[in-house]
Structure formats: C-alpha cells, structure tokens
Length: 352
Image 1 (cartoon, rainbow, N blue to C red):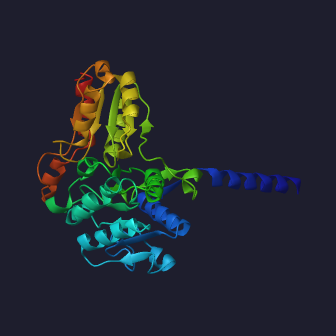
Image 2 (image 1 turned 135 degrees about the vertical axis):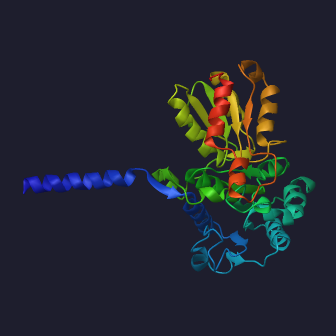
Image 3 (image 1 turned 90 degrees about the vertical axis):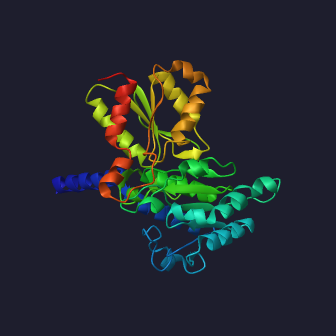
C-alpha cells in the first residue's frame, strides 16, 4: 500500500511538472489565439477582410472566430481592398480598433492611399487629435509558385513611411506577442506575416500561452548568442540565419543571430552592441537589394560609432533583383538560402 501511494505521488508530481514544460504552437494558431484574446478583451476590436468569417480565412488564420464572435466582430468583405481598407481606417478614426486582413500584401497596393495618406498621416495632420489604432495584417513576401504579382516583399516599402509601425514576426512567440501589442497600439501597424511560416511549429512557454503575454514593438531578440559574426534578419530570413549558424558552428564559427521583430521602430542598439562584440555583420532578407532593409542597416552602421569596430564590410544576403519567376527552378534561384548566408559569413571572416 505504501509503495502504491509513493507511486501515485510520484506520478502526480510528474504530471504537474510536465504541465509547466514548454509545448509547441504553429504561427497560424498563435495569430488566431492573439486575435481571439484581443476580441474578447476589447469590444472595439474587430476583424474584416476577404473570406475571414464563414470560410475561416484563406489561410485559416481566423478559423473558428466567426462562430465564436459573430457577424459584428468578424466581417466578410467584397473583393475590394480599396473599399474595405477605407472602411477600416474610417472605423479607426471613429474610435474602433480594426484588424484589416489582406489575403496577400501584394493586394495592399490597391489600398495604398488609405494606408499611407489616411492611416499613416492623420495623427500628424490632426496635431495629435485623431489617433488611428488599426492593424493591417496578412502574408508578405514570396510563397511558392505564385509568380511576380503575388511574391513581393513590402518590408522596405512600408518601413520607409513615417507614421506607420512595421512588425515582422518569425516564430509563434513573435506572432502572438507582437500581434497583441499591435492591436493595443494607438498607431497604425503594418503586420507582415509569412505564408511559409504559418504551418511551422515553435516551442512556446506557459508565459506565451497566457492571455497577458505581450511583446514590446521595437525591440529585437537575440535568437542565438555568438562571438565571431552578427547575422541580422527578420521574418523567414531568421530561419535561414539560424540554420546557417548551426552549420557554421561545425567549423568553429560562433554566429550571433538577431531577429529584428520590427522594422519601424528599428532596434539599432541591439545590432550596435553585437557588432562591438563580433566586429563582423551580415544582413539577411528575402526582398530586393536596392534600398532594402540591409541597405538601411549598412547606412546606420556607417553613420554611427560602431563603424570603427568593423573588421570587414557589412555583407548583404537578399533576393535577386528581378520580378519573381514562375518556373520552379528560377524561383529557387531568385531567393536567398541558408547556403548564401554561410557563404557570406565565410567571406566576411575570410574563411576559404
């Protein structure tokens, strides 16, 4: 009997400890959970976009939300980005907190006037009297097999514009914590997701699963500490960077990987501190090179005191400067890979 009681006690303690261990969550579920929690938390929050309600979203990000929250909070719109984006911006002017979903950010070009001239500039033009608390969210950048008009990365486009905050999550933790922060923010936020990452699972702590979990916008995360080279990236580029760091470790290179998380505001201080330690930097992005995020990082490095700490020029890993080809082999050739990151690091460190 005593032995059985001891066994039961051990089993109960084991079960209790396992509930505190990290579980996994897909980026898709993290985004869904963030919206669900914020819609329940604040009566002013609602989601609108094409197929977000009865169809559960084109990528199932809003799965179950319409059945749970109803027609007033989850709103299907006609196929008119210019129209429903204007409705969403007007709702934000009136004090609501809309989440405006684009089926892909390529279609946001249909609504660029509402995003830039209405959402981004109104707080300034009203002398601070009219805040615009709105989130524009959806997949950004290349997916697979969808050619030039559906593969563009708009990170640098939107980061260029004062008045917008631009957020670029990588992991499930990023997706949940940053989306909740974006919905609560009183400024317009462009929330750039990645279709390829939607189905990927990431370990998450009990803290991430909490309804109170929010990440600060404008603060980068050091995904992997290192001493020999700094690799800076965001969104899916972080995946390539971490894979490259793992390969480089096998040859004795210790790479520090920085996940920017947001592009505006931009956490240059984390990059600066890392360069003071490593003295080498490689930037990684999937968009075009000209006037890209890597170019901005290079400019800020050169214009700051950390420039004198570099032992080699900053090197950029980017997409190829062409419209995205449809042919599979050419599409692969147009995008950066882990191998490109490894090659750039070796060049920076002068390793054959």
